[in-house]
Image (cartoon, rainbow over all chains, first blue to last red):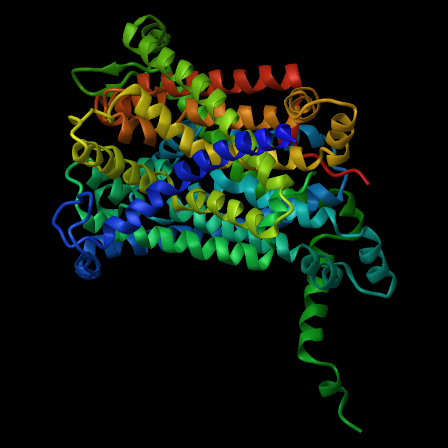
Length: 266
Length: 314
Protein backbone atom coordinates (compact mmCIF):
# COMPACT_ATOMS: atom_id res chain seq x y z
CA UNK A 1 0.00 0.00 0.00
CA UNK A 2 1.57 3.29 -1.09
CA UNK A 3 -0.39 5.19 1.55
CA UNK A 4 1.45 3.53 4.41
CA UNK A 5 4.81 4.22 2.77
CA UNK A 6 3.85 7.87 2.25
CA UNK A 7 2.92 8.16 5.90
CA UNK A 8 6.26 6.73 7.00
CA UNK A 9 8.18 9.11 4.71
CA UNK A 10 6.16 12.06 5.98
CA UNK A 11 6.62 11.17 9.64
CA UNK A 12 10.30 10.31 9.36
CA UNK A 13 11.14 13.53 7.52
CA UNK A 14 10.00 15.45 10.58
CA UNK A 15 11.52 13.01 13.06
CA UNK A 16 14.93 13.24 11.42
CA UNK A 17 14.71 17.04 11.19
CA UNK A 18 13.87 17.24 14.90
CA UNK A 19 16.63 14.78 15.79
CA UNK A 20 19.17 16.92 13.93
CA UNK A 21 17.94 20.11 15.61
CA UNK A 22 18.06 18.50 19.03
CA UNK A 23 21.41 16.79 18.71
CA UNK A 24 23.50 19.05 16.48
CA UNK A 25 24.62 21.51 19.20
CA UNK A 26 25.58 18.69 21.56
CA UNK A 27 27.53 16.80 18.93
CA UNK A 28 29.30 19.94 17.74
CA UNK A 29 30.25 21.06 21.24
CA UNK A 30 31.60 17.58 21.97
CA UNK A 31 33.61 17.63 18.75
CA UNK A 32 34.91 21.16 19.26
CA UNK A 33 36.17 20.35 22.75
CA UNK A 34 38.68 17.86 21.30
CA UNK A 35 40.15 20.22 18.72
CA UNK A 36 43.90 20.80 18.63
CA UNK A 37 43.61 24.28 17.15
CA UNK A 38 43.32 27.61 18.92
CA UNK A 39 39.99 28.42 17.38
CA UNK A 40 37.08 26.23 16.45
CA UNK A 41 37.23 25.36 12.76
CA UNK A 42 35.61 22.93 10.45
CA UNK A 43 36.99 20.43 9.64
CA UNK A 44 38.81 20.32 13.02
CA UNK A 45 42.58 20.69 13.14
CA UNK A 46 43.29 17.30 14.66
CA UNK A 47 42.48 15.84 18.04
CA UNK A 48 43.84 16.77 21.43
CA UNK A 49 42.87 16.98 25.06
CA UNK A 50 44.69 20.28 25.59
CA UNK A 51 41.51 22.25 26.27
CA UNK A 52 40.54 19.78 28.98
CA UNK A 53 43.98 20.25 30.54
CA UNK A 54 43.35 23.98 30.29
CA UNK A 55 40.01 23.95 32.09
CA UNK A 56 41.36 21.62 34.76
CA UNK A 57 43.80 24.41 35.62
CA UNK A 58 41.36 27.31 35.24
CA UNK A 59 40.21 28.20 38.73
CA UNK A 60 37.49 30.59 37.57
CA UNK A 61 35.68 27.89 35.59
CA UNK A 62 36.16 25.31 38.34
CA UNK A 63 34.88 27.69 41.00
CA UNK A 64 31.89 28.59 38.85
CA UNK A 65 31.09 24.90 38.45
CA UNK A 66 31.37 24.30 42.21
CA UNK A 67 29.05 27.24 42.81
CA UNK A 68 26.53 25.75 40.39
CA UNK A 69 26.73 22.44 42.24
CA UNK A 70 26.15 24.26 45.54
CA UNK A 71 23.11 26.09 44.14
CA UNK A 72 21.67 22.86 42.75
CA UNK A 73 22.19 21.09 46.08
CA UNK A 74 20.43 23.83 48.06
CA UNK A 75 17.58 23.80 45.54
CA UNK A 76 17.15 20.03 45.81
CA UNK A 77 17.38 19.97 49.61
CA UNK A 78 14.61 22.58 49.85
CA UNK A 79 12.47 21.04 47.13
CA UNK A 80 12.36 17.48 48.52
CA UNK A 81 10.44 18.10 51.78
CA UNK A 82 8.38 21.01 50.44
CA UNK A 83 7.35 19.32 47.20
CA UNK A 84 6.77 15.90 48.74
CA UNK A 85 4.42 17.17 51.44
CA UNK A 86 2.52 19.37 48.99
CA UNK A 87 2.28 16.61 46.38
CA UNK A 88 0.93 14.08 48.89
CA UNK A 89 -1.50 16.59 50.36
CA UNK A 90 -2.85 17.52 46.92
CA UNK A 91 -3.35 13.97 45.73
CA UNK A 92 -4.63 12.49 49.00
CA UNK A 93 -6.98 15.05 50.44
CA UNK A 94 -9.90 16.97 49.10
CA UNK A 95 -8.69 20.38 50.23
CA UNK A 96 -10.98 23.38 50.25
CA UNK A 97 -10.23 25.95 47.54
CA UNK A 98 -8.43 23.17 45.66
CA UNK A 99 -8.68 25.01 42.33
CA UNK A 100 -7.27 28.21 43.79
CA UNK A 101 -4.39 26.36 45.39
CA UNK A 102 -3.57 24.63 42.13
CA UNK A 103 -3.52 27.91 40.23
CA UNK A 104 -1.43 29.45 43.00
CA UNK A 105 1.09 26.59 43.00
CA UNK A 106 1.38 26.88 39.21
CA UNK A 107 2.44 30.53 39.55
CA UNK A 108 6.13 29.64 39.08
CA UNK A 109 5.22 28.41 35.59
CA UNK A 110 2.69 31.08 34.66
CA UNK A 111 4.81 34.03 35.78
CA UNK A 112 7.48 34.52 33.10
CA UNK A 113 10.96 33.64 34.28
CA UNK A 114 12.18 37.21 33.82
CA UNK A 115 9.30 38.42 36.01
CA UNK A 116 10.03 35.87 38.74
CA UNK A 117 13.73 36.63 38.55
CA UNK A 118 13.29 40.40 38.79
CA UNK A 119 10.75 40.00 41.60
CA UNK A 120 13.04 37.72 43.60
CA UNK A 121 15.94 40.09 42.91
CA UNK A 122 13.96 42.98 44.39
CA UNK A 123 12.76 40.89 47.37
CA UNK A 124 16.22 39.50 48.13
CA UNK A 125 17.71 42.96 47.59
CA UNK A 126 15.29 44.42 50.13
CA UNK A 127 16.25 41.66 52.58
CA UNK A 128 19.97 42.32 51.95
CA UNK A 129 20.49 38.75 50.72
CA UNK A 130 21.96 39.52 47.31
CA UNK A 131 25.61 38.60 46.87
CA UNK A 132 25.12 35.27 48.62
CA UNK A 133 24.72 31.96 46.91
CA UNK A 134 22.02 30.18 48.90
CA UNK A 135 19.23 32.57 47.86
CA UNK A 136 20.00 31.58 44.27
CA UNK A 137 19.35 27.95 45.28
CA UNK A 138 16.05 28.91 46.92
CA UNK A 139 15.09 30.92 43.82
CA UNK A 140 15.81 27.95 41.54
CA UNK A 141 13.65 25.83 43.84
CA UNK A 142 10.72 28.26 43.66
CA UNK A 143 10.71 28.57 39.88
CA UNK A 144 10.81 24.79 39.30
CA UNK A 145 8.69 23.67 42.26
CA UNK A 146 5.71 22.50 40.14
CA UNK A 147 7.96 19.84 38.59
CA UNK A 148 8.62 18.39 42.04
CA UNK A 149 4.95 18.52 43.03
CA UNK A 150 3.88 16.91 39.74
CA UNK A 151 6.40 14.10 40.13
CA UNK A 152 5.24 13.32 43.67
CA UNK A 153 1.57 13.59 42.74
CA UNK A 154 2.04 11.11 39.91
CA UNK A 155 3.37 8.53 42.39
CA UNK A 156 0.93 9.39 45.15
CA UNK A 157 -2.04 8.96 42.81
CA UNK A 158 -1.12 5.30 42.38
CA UNK A 159 -1.05 4.68 46.15
CA UNK A 160 -4.13 2.79 47.28
CA UNK A 161 -5.56 4.76 50.24
CA UNK A 162 -6.72 1.46 51.75
CA UNK A 163 -3.07 0.64 52.46
CA UNK A 164 -2.78 3.57 54.83
CA UNK A 165 -6.08 2.63 56.46
CA UNK A 166 -4.84 -0.95 56.81
CA UNK A 167 -1.67 0.27 58.51
CA UNK A 168 -3.71 2.38 60.88
CA UNK A 169 -6.01 -0.56 61.48
CA UNK A 170 -2.98 -2.64 62.49
CA UNK A 171 -2.22 -0.01 65.12
CA UNK A 172 0.33 2.14 63.34
CA UNK A 173 0.22 5.74 64.54
CA UNK A 174 0.06 8.50 61.88
CA UNK A 175 3.80 9.21 61.59
CA UNK A 176 4.68 5.50 61.32
CA UNK A 177 2.06 5.10 58.62
CA UNK A 178 3.55 8.06 56.80
CA UNK A 179 7.15 6.81 56.99
CA UNK A 180 6.46 3.12 56.34
CA UNK A 181 3.55 3.20 53.90
CA UNK A 182 3.04 6.62 52.27
CA UNK A 183 6.65 7.69 51.83
CA UNK A 184 7.94 4.44 50.29
CA UNK A 185 5.02 4.50 47.87
CA UNK A 186 5.81 7.98 46.61
CA UNK A 187 9.58 7.44 46.64
CA UNK A 188 9.88 7.03 42.83
CA UNK A 189 8.22 10.40 42.41
CA UNK A 190 10.41 12.01 45.06
CA UNK A 191 13.56 10.67 43.42
CA UNK A 192 12.66 11.65 39.87
CA UNK A 193 11.45 15.05 41.05
CA UNK A 194 14.64 15.65 43.04
CA UNK A 195 16.72 14.65 40.03
CA UNK A 196 14.81 17.09 37.82
CA UNK A 197 15.19 19.88 40.37
CA UNK A 198 18.93 19.25 40.68
CA UNK A 199 19.70 19.20 36.97
CA UNK A 200 17.46 22.18 36.18
CA UNK A 201 19.07 24.23 38.97
CA UNK A 202 22.52 23.16 37.77
CA UNK A 203 21.98 24.74 34.38
CA UNK A 204 19.55 27.51 35.38
CA UNK A 205 20.68 30.61 33.57
CA UNK A 206 18.37 33.62 33.68
CA UNK A 207 17.52 33.63 37.38
CA UNK A 208 21.19 33.06 38.18
CA UNK A 209 22.15 35.95 35.92
CA UNK A 210 19.79 38.27 37.79
CA UNK A 211 20.74 37.16 41.29
CA UNK A 212 24.52 36.77 41.16
CA UNK A 213 27.18 39.45 41.01
CA UNK A 214 30.62 39.26 39.41
CA UNK A 215 32.14 37.52 42.45
CA UNK A 216 29.75 34.59 42.56
CA UNK A 217 28.85 33.77 38.96
CA UNK A 218 27.51 30.29 38.34
CA UNK A 219 28.77 28.24 35.42
CA UNK A 220 25.96 29.01 32.91
CA UNK A 221 26.42 32.73 33.58
CA UNK A 222 30.19 32.35 33.21
CA UNK A 223 29.74 30.65 29.84
CA UNK A 224 27.25 33.30 28.75
CA UNK A 225 29.64 36.09 29.66
CA UNK A 226 32.46 34.38 27.78
CA UNK A 227 30.62 33.62 24.53
CA UNK A 228 29.78 37.29 24.19
CA UNK A 229 33.45 38.03 23.65
CA UNK A 230 35.60 35.52 21.79
CA UNK A 231 34.68 31.88 21.38
CA UNK A 232 37.56 29.63 22.39
CA UNK A 233 37.50 25.84 22.65
CA UNK A 234 37.97 25.83 26.44
CA UNK A 235 34.31 26.84 26.62
CA UNK A 236 33.44 23.76 24.61
CA UNK A 237 35.44 21.65 27.04
CA UNK A 238 33.62 23.10 30.06
CA UNK A 239 30.29 22.72 28.27
CA UNK A 240 31.04 19.02 28.01
CA UNK A 241 30.76 18.95 31.80
CA UNK A 242 27.11 19.98 31.39
CA UNK A 243 26.60 17.40 28.67
CA UNK A 244 28.09 14.73 30.94
CA UNK A 245 25.83 15.80 33.83
CA UNK A 246 22.81 15.77 31.54
CA UNK A 247 23.77 12.32 30.27
CA UNK A 248 24.10 11.04 33.83
CA UNK A 249 20.74 12.54 34.75
CA UNK A 250 18.99 10.95 31.77
CA UNK A 251 20.59 7.59 32.58
CA UNK A 252 19.58 7.79 36.25
CA UNK A 253 16.07 8.94 35.43
CA UNK A 254 15.69 6.03 33.02
CA UNK A 255 17.03 3.50 35.52
CA UNK A 256 15.02 4.82 38.45
CA UNK A 257 11.60 5.50 36.99
CA UNK A 258 11.91 4.79 33.26
CA UNK A 259 11.66 7.58 30.70
CA UNK A 260 8.47 5.96 29.38
CA UNK A 261 6.62 7.40 32.35
CA UNK A 262 6.47 10.72 30.50
CA UNK A 263 4.42 9.09 27.74
CA UNK A 264 1.66 7.92 30.08
CA UNK A 265 -1.63 9.65 29.64
CA UNK A 266 -3.05 11.18 32.79
CA UNK B 1 15.33 -13.61 79.61
CA UNK B 2 16.66 -10.41 78.02
CA UNK B 3 15.99 -7.10 79.65
CA UNK B 4 12.96 -5.27 78.37
CA UNK B 5 15.18 -2.33 77.45
CA UNK B 6 17.06 -4.22 74.77
CA UNK B 7 13.98 -5.99 73.52
CA UNK B 8 12.52 -2.63 72.56
CA UNK B 9 14.81 -1.29 69.84
CA UNK B 10 16.05 2.25 69.76
CA UNK B 11 14.32 3.09 66.47
CA UNK B 12 10.97 2.21 68.05
CA UNK B 13 11.72 4.52 70.96
CA UNK B 14 12.58 7.29 68.55
CA UNK B 15 9.40 6.72 66.60
CA UNK B 16 7.36 6.67 69.82
CA UNK B 17 8.91 9.95 70.89
CA UNK B 18 8.22 11.45 67.46
CA UNK B 19 4.63 10.20 67.52
CA UNK B 20 4.13 11.67 70.95
CA UNK B 21 5.67 14.95 69.88
CA UNK B 22 3.52 15.02 66.75
CA UNK B 23 0.41 14.24 68.77
CA UNK B 24 1.12 17.10 71.18
CA UNK B 25 2.06 19.58 68.49
CA UNK B 26 -0.78 18.61 66.20
CA UNK B 27 -3.62 17.02 68.17
CA UNK B 28 -6.04 14.73 66.36
CA UNK B 29 -8.84 17.27 66.42
CA UNK B 30 -6.74 19.41 64.06
CA UNK B 31 -6.67 16.52 61.58
CA UNK B 32 -8.94 18.36 59.18
CA UNK B 33 -6.31 21.04 58.84
CA UNK B 34 -3.51 18.53 58.24
CA UNK B 35 -3.49 19.02 54.43
CA UNK B 36 -2.99 22.73 55.02
CA UNK B 37 -0.01 22.02 57.28
CA UNK B 38 1.50 19.87 54.53
CA UNK B 39 0.83 22.52 51.90
CA UNK B 40 2.12 25.40 54.00
CA UNK B 41 5.82 25.21 53.04
CA UNK B 42 5.00 25.15 49.32
CA UNK B 43 2.51 28.00 49.71
CA UNK B 44 5.10 30.04 51.58
CA UNK B 45 7.83 29.35 49.04
CA UNK B 46 5.62 30.37 46.12
CA UNK B 47 4.65 33.34 48.29
CA UNK B 48 8.13 34.68 47.54
CA UNK B 49 6.99 35.14 43.94
CA UNK B 50 3.86 36.97 45.06
CA UNK B 51 6.02 39.23 47.23
CA UNK B 52 8.21 39.75 44.17
CA UNK B 53 5.21 40.77 42.07
CA UNK B 54 4.09 43.20 44.75
CA UNK B 55 7.59 44.64 44.89
CA UNK B 56 7.63 44.96 41.09
CA UNK B 57 4.25 46.69 41.20
CA UNK B 58 5.50 49.12 43.83
CA UNK B 59 8.72 49.91 41.94
CA UNK B 60 6.84 50.33 38.66
CA UNK B 61 4.98 53.29 40.12
CA UNK B 62 8.17 55.22 40.89
CA UNK B 63 10.16 57.18 38.33
CA UNK B 64 13.91 57.48 38.18
CA UNK B 65 15.34 60.84 39.18
CA UNK B 66 18.15 61.29 36.66
CA UNK B 67 20.07 63.73 38.86
CA UNK B 68 20.28 61.58 41.99
CA UNK B 69 19.69 58.17 40.35
CA UNK B 70 17.16 57.41 43.07
CA UNK B 71 13.57 56.31 42.64
CA UNK B 72 10.91 58.85 43.46
CA UNK B 73 9.09 58.66 46.79
CA UNK B 74 5.64 59.36 45.41
CA UNK B 75 3.58 57.16 43.12
CA UNK B 76 3.05 58.12 39.48
CA UNK B 77 1.88 56.39 36.33
CA UNK B 78 4.61 58.04 34.24
CA UNK B 79 6.42 54.74 33.59
CA UNK B 80 3.28 53.14 32.18
CA UNK B 81 2.78 56.16 29.94
CA UNK B 82 6.33 55.77 28.67
CA UNK B 83 5.96 52.02 28.19
CA UNK B 84 2.90 52.35 25.96
CA UNK B 85 3.95 55.45 24.06
CA UNK B 86 7.65 54.98 23.30
CA UNK B 87 8.03 53.33 19.93
CA UNK B 88 11.05 51.28 21.01
CA UNK B 89 8.93 49.21 23.36
CA UNK B 90 6.18 48.79 20.79
CA UNK B 91 8.77 47.47 18.33
CA UNK B 92 10.17 45.04 20.89
CA UNK B 93 6.70 43.89 21.94
CA UNK B 94 5.59 43.33 18.35
CA UNK B 95 8.80 41.47 17.57
CA UNK B 96 8.36 39.21 20.60
CA UNK B 97 4.66 38.55 20.03
CA UNK B 98 5.00 37.83 16.31
CA UNK B 99 8.10 35.75 16.96
CA UNK B 100 6.51 33.64 19.66
CA UNK B 101 3.44 32.99 17.49
CA UNK B 102 5.61 31.82 14.58
CA UNK B 103 7.74 29.73 16.94
CA UNK B 104 4.63 28.11 18.43
CA UNK B 105 3.21 27.08 15.06
CA UNK B 106 6.54 25.79 13.70
CA UNK B 107 7.37 23.95 16.92
CA UNK B 108 3.99 22.22 17.02
CA UNK B 109 4.30 21.18 13.36
CA UNK B 110 7.68 19.58 14.02
CA UNK B 111 6.90 18.20 17.47
CA UNK B 112 3.65 16.48 16.51
CA UNK B 113 5.08 13.85 14.12
CA UNK B 114 7.97 13.23 16.53
CA UNK B 115 5.62 12.66 19.45
CA UNK B 116 3.39 10.50 17.25
CA UNK B 117 6.24 8.24 16.15
CA UNK B 118 7.55 8.05 19.71
CA UNK B 119 4.19 6.97 21.08
CA UNK B 120 3.17 4.64 18.25
CA UNK B 121 6.41 2.85 17.39
CA UNK B 122 6.35 -0.85 18.28
CA UNK B 123 10.09 -0.80 18.91
CA UNK B 124 10.98 -0.15 22.54
CA UNK B 125 14.54 0.64 21.53
CA UNK B 126 13.49 3.37 19.09
CA UNK B 127 11.16 4.84 21.67
CA UNK B 128 13.98 4.99 24.20
CA UNK B 129 16.35 6.58 21.69
CA UNK B 130 13.80 9.24 20.80
CA UNK B 131 13.21 9.92 24.49
CA UNK B 132 16.92 10.24 25.20
CA UNK B 133 17.36 12.59 22.23
CA UNK B 134 14.61 14.67 23.82
CA UNK B 135 15.82 14.73 27.41
CA UNK B 136 19.51 15.24 26.80
CA UNK B 137 19.18 18.75 25.31
CA UNK B 138 16.45 19.58 27.83
CA UNK B 139 18.94 18.89 30.63
CA UNK B 140 21.95 20.49 28.94
CA UNK B 141 20.56 23.96 29.27
CA UNK B 142 19.99 26.89 26.98
CA UNK B 143 23.38 28.52 27.14
CA UNK B 144 25.37 25.48 26.07
CA UNK B 145 22.94 24.73 23.26
CA UNK B 146 23.05 28.31 22.02
CA UNK B 147 26.84 28.04 22.17
CA UNK B 148 26.68 24.95 19.97
CA UNK B 149 24.62 26.87 17.42
CA UNK B 150 27.14 29.71 17.51
CA UNK B 151 29.81 27.21 16.47
CA UNK B 152 27.62 25.82 13.70
CA UNK B 153 26.17 29.05 12.31
CA UNK B 154 28.89 31.62 13.02
CA UNK B 155 30.65 33.57 10.29
CA UNK B 156 33.58 31.17 10.54
CA UNK B 157 31.19 28.44 11.65
CA UNK B 158 30.74 24.96 10.29
CA UNK B 159 28.00 25.80 7.80
CA UNK B 160 29.93 28.69 6.29
CA UNK B 161 33.18 26.70 6.17
CA UNK B 162 31.35 23.87 4.46
CA UNK B 163 29.81 26.31 1.99
CA UNK B 164 33.29 27.75 1.42
CA UNK B 165 34.55 24.31 0.44
CA UNK B 166 32.08 24.26 -2.44
CA UNK B 167 32.87 27.87 -3.32
CA UNK B 168 29.95 29.74 -1.82
CA UNK B 169 30.69 33.06 -0.12
CA UNK B 170 29.96 33.15 3.64
CA UNK B 171 26.37 34.05 4.55
CA UNK B 172 25.47 35.91 7.71
CA UNK B 173 23.41 33.30 9.52
CA UNK B 174 23.53 34.71 13.03
CA UNK B 175 22.39 37.86 14.80
CA UNK B 176 19.17 38.19 12.82
CA UNK B 177 15.50 37.48 13.46
CA UNK B 178 15.34 34.05 11.79
CA UNK B 179 18.35 32.91 13.85
CA UNK B 180 16.55 33.83 17.06
CA UNK B 181 13.34 32.12 15.93
CA UNK B 182 15.28 29.02 14.92
CA UNK B 183 17.04 28.97 18.30
CA UNK B 184 13.69 29.25 20.06
CA UNK B 185 12.13 26.44 18.00
CA UNK B 186 14.92 23.98 18.78
CA UNK B 187 14.81 25.04 22.44
CA UNK B 188 11.01 24.52 22.65
CA UNK B 189 10.86 21.15 20.87
CA UNK B 190 11.39 18.99 23.99
CA UNK B 191 8.72 20.90 25.91
CA UNK B 192 6.24 20.55 23.07
CA UNK B 193 6.86 16.83 22.50
CA UNK B 194 6.61 16.07 26.21
CA UNK B 195 3.30 17.91 26.44
CA UNK B 196 1.94 16.22 23.31
CA UNK B 197 2.99 12.65 24.09
CA UNK B 198 0.52 11.90 26.93
CA UNK B 199 -2.36 13.23 24.82
CA UNK B 200 -1.34 11.00 21.91
CA UNK B 201 -0.98 7.99 24.20
CA UNK B 202 -4.60 8.50 25.21
CA UNK B 203 -5.78 8.07 21.61
CA UNK B 204 -6.54 4.42 21.03
CA UNK B 205 -4.77 2.97 18.01
CA UNK B 206 -7.91 0.99 17.16
CA UNK B 207 -9.65 4.24 16.23
CA UNK B 208 -7.08 4.87 13.53
CA UNK B 209 -7.34 1.28 12.34
CA UNK B 210 -11.11 1.59 12.24
CA UNK B 211 -10.89 4.77 10.17
CA UNK B 212 -8.46 3.00 7.85
CA UNK B 213 -10.72 -0.03 7.44
CA UNK B 214 -13.60 2.29 6.58
CA UNK B 215 -11.54 3.56 3.70
CA UNK B 216 -9.89 6.71 5.05
CA UNK B 217 -6.33 7.30 3.89
CA UNK B 218 -3.66 8.15 6.45
CA UNK B 219 -3.94 11.87 5.72
CA UNK B 220 -7.68 11.87 6.41
CA UNK B 221 -7.23 9.70 9.50
CA UNK B 222 -4.58 12.11 10.72
CA UNK B 223 -6.71 15.19 10.07
CA UNK B 224 -10.05 13.89 11.28
CA UNK B 225 -9.14 11.40 14.01
CA UNK B 226 -5.69 12.03 15.47
CA UNK B 227 -5.53 15.82 15.32
CA UNK B 228 -8.94 16.55 16.92
CA UNK B 229 -8.41 13.95 19.64
CA UNK B 230 -4.96 15.38 20.39
CA UNK B 231 -6.44 18.80 21.09
CA UNK B 232 -5.73 18.83 24.84
CA UNK B 233 -2.09 18.07 24.10
CA UNK B 234 -1.89 20.68 21.36
CA UNK B 235 -3.35 23.31 23.70
CA UNK B 236 -1.01 22.41 26.55
CA UNK B 237 2.02 22.36 24.28
CA UNK B 238 0.90 25.55 22.52
CA UNK B 239 0.54 27.51 25.75
CA UNK B 240 3.85 26.33 27.11
CA UNK B 241 5.72 27.12 23.91
CA UNK B 242 3.96 30.47 23.41
CA UNK B 243 4.64 31.80 26.89
CA UNK B 244 8.16 30.42 27.15
CA UNK B 245 9.24 31.81 23.79
CA UNK B 246 7.47 35.14 24.34
CA UNK B 247 9.41 35.66 27.54
CA UNK B 248 12.72 34.06 26.61
CA UNK B 249 15.93 35.90 27.31
CA UNK B 250 18.87 33.70 26.32
CA UNK B 251 18.12 32.98 22.65
CA UNK B 252 17.50 36.61 21.61
CA UNK B 253 20.53 37.66 23.65
CA UNK B 254 22.94 35.04 22.30
CA UNK B 255 21.70 34.29 18.77
CA UNK B 256 20.30 37.79 18.24
CA UNK B 257 23.48 39.49 19.40
CA UNK B 258 21.71 42.47 20.96
CA UNK B 259 20.00 43.56 17.74
CA UNK B 260 16.94 41.32 18.11
CA UNK B 261 15.83 42.06 21.65
CA UNK B 262 12.68 40.43 23.01
CA UNK B 263 10.72 41.86 25.95
CA UNK B 264 12.85 40.05 28.53
CA UNK B 265 16.01 41.59 27.09
CA UNK B 266 14.46 45.06 27.19
CA UNK B 267 13.58 44.52 30.86
CA UNK B 268 17.08 43.32 31.64
CA UNK B 269 18.58 46.35 29.91
CA UNK B 270 16.38 48.73 31.92
CA UNK B 271 17.68 47.18 35.14
CA UNK B 272 21.33 46.65 34.32
CA UNK B 273 22.21 49.13 31.56
CA UNK B 274 20.03 52.19 32.13
CA UNK B 275 19.50 51.34 35.81
CA UNK B 276 15.91 52.54 35.52
CA UNK B 277 14.33 50.08 37.91
CA UNK B 278 10.97 51.83 37.70
CA UNK B 279 10.58 51.48 33.94
CA UNK B 280 12.07 47.96 34.04
CA UNK B 281 9.49 46.93 36.65
CA UNK B 282 6.71 48.45 34.57
CA UNK B 283 7.76 46.41 31.55
CA UNK B 284 8.08 43.26 33.69
CA UNK B 285 4.60 43.73 35.12
CA UNK B 286 3.14 44.33 31.66
CA UNK B 287 4.84 41.15 30.43
CA UNK B 288 3.39 39.16 33.34
CA UNK B 289 -0.01 40.64 32.48
CA UNK B 290 0.26 39.80 28.78
CA UNK B 291 1.47 36.27 29.59
CA UNK B 292 -1.34 35.62 32.07
CA UNK B 293 -3.86 37.10 29.65
CA UNK B 294 -2.73 34.77 26.86
CA UNK B 295 -2.87 31.73 29.15
CA UNK B 296 -6.24 32.85 30.46
CA UNK B 297 -7.71 33.32 26.98
CA UNK B 298 -6.47 29.94 25.77
CA UNK B 299 -7.73 28.24 28.96
CA UNK B 300 -11.20 29.74 28.70
CA UNK B 301 -11.44 29.00 24.97
CA UNK B 302 -10.08 25.47 25.01
CA UNK B 303 -9.84 24.30 28.64
CA UNK B 304 -6.68 23.53 30.58
CA UNK B 305 -5.60 20.67 28.33
CA UNK B 306 -2.83 18.49 29.74
CA UNK B 307 -1.71 21.25 32.10
CA UNK B 308 -4.36 20.60 34.74
CA UNK B 309 -2.83 19.77 38.12
CA UNK B 310 -6.04 18.14 39.31
CA UNK B 311 -6.38 15.37 41.84
CA UNK B 312 -6.85 12.17 39.88
CA UNK B 313 -10.39 11.04 40.54
CA UNK B 314 -10.78 7.45 41.48
